[in-house]
Length: 473
Image (cartoon, rainbow, N blue to C red; front, side):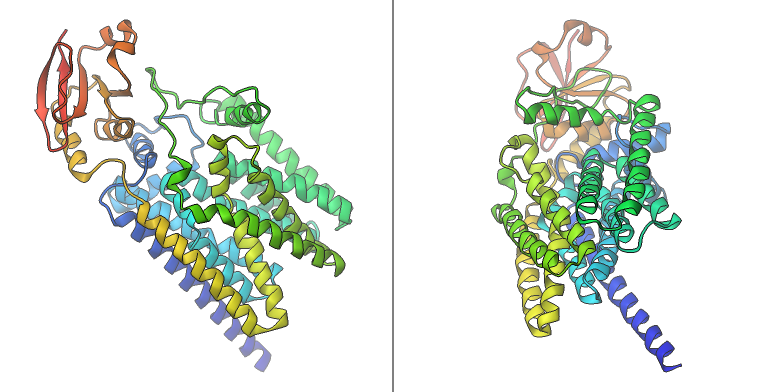
């Protein structure tokens, strides 16, 4: 009977820790979004467009893996506001990422301490904050990715069961329904886990059977989605483009498909990331290598599979031969190896001394927190709120079905969201095909206030930041 009380007390204590850290993570992420009335970064309004399209037309405006947008749509319906729904949805699912991280590292690290530290490393990850405020799909996919890794670890530790193979397949598919990068990293984990399990003879026959099932599930998913829903999964082309760039052939640029030609938005520069973020991969690779040799000597093969695979993936994602335009996106994914390797390192130090482990954890948390706060301070929308109000006012001046040409790439998604129903593009008028311009009854330009176009036109509205001009036929 006393044992039962102790077990219940431990479970209550654990539930309190996990729920408290999850709530803190959710509040922290939401505070980043709520510091400005608008959603941040270049891709922020893109998510608003997709959700608005689902709610108004029942389909996506752009072809993209759909899961994230439908999840955000639920929040938008419940909260009665698209922008607030996207902010809350992104914060909720990003905070939810801490849950699989906790259970993975609690089990691998043999205790609540490692699991709790993994949660904090997710919450305070500067790359993850950067990811969730601009590449929301990518950030939410990390949740499914960590859950998939948990079940890979479970299979190597306990063998194949109906529950773990079904759930591993389920979370693998969820990564594919969310973002190509998360799906690719999940497949990379599966490949390296299979190789490690075979070489180290970790439940070799059982794991190879599980791996075969998971490979079949992933191949079936790719074939099915590319055949029947190719317009939603054109991101597969990004993998081909990346491989071409990697070997120097030069991949074709992948554009989001719209009815009229649209120039792609320029990516944010790597220089906009805090410089200290790029130091982490080297620290993680060294720490992971040391841990792997230690685990190999102690014959802890299930843990060795996890740590060695994670270390190799961290190395592969940060190779200097990767083209810069791809490398900075991979660097954001170091949130996964960071949570795994550092929390496992802390669990090994815990075996030596609790005080030493607490000091190690405190140092890691302080360093992470300083970077997280620094990154959070740089997060901002691409237009001002006054500029947004100008767009809202312009909406009533523009007939549905018009062509709107914006002068800045940062305006394009915002104009398209506010003026939903009209075609919006970014570019220079004299570079656009004449037949495109003639196909619209009304062609409008949104310019910075005070910049008059050198073509026949009339000024329709002068706002606080922008002005609306209509081309004369």
